[in-house]
Length: 178
Image (cartoon, rainbow, N blue to C red; front, side, top):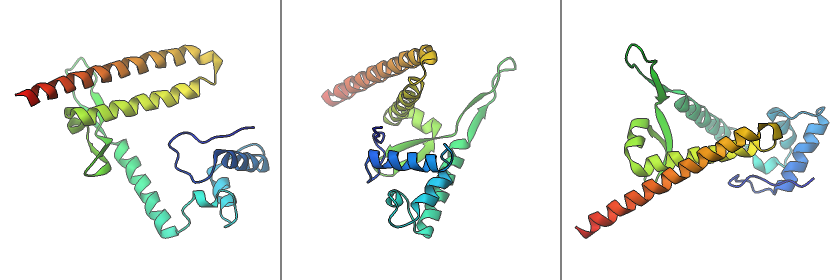
């Protein structure tokens, strides 16, 4: 079987080695893989996946706490009451963006939505999420109609994004000629 890692996954190992090792762990454990099995099998210094993990417990503990903090940040919603006839609107309170000044960080949804560049980042992230979902669904032939629906939404978002970019570029050109 041929294995590869998804693009953007920062591992120093090659996908074939990772896939074969995970498959061996799965076979060793009756056909299933659990995260703990992978960690246990990767602990020896000479284990094929050893370098995929942070083994310094102080660093690993802090990284785990940062992951928990990110999960906590992503879990907060803003509830906006509407008229009596409408249900409240629920939106994420904070969105992850990347800025030159702060790198990856979270900002209030209201602020992100008010800034074109940040808003475009969030839309791009949403398109990437759709692409990953589409990739998962593609494996199931009986779910092809959902796959097609995601493609339609993806294309509409990309078109919307391109339209906004063109409008923003025209505005910047107009401002520079003043």
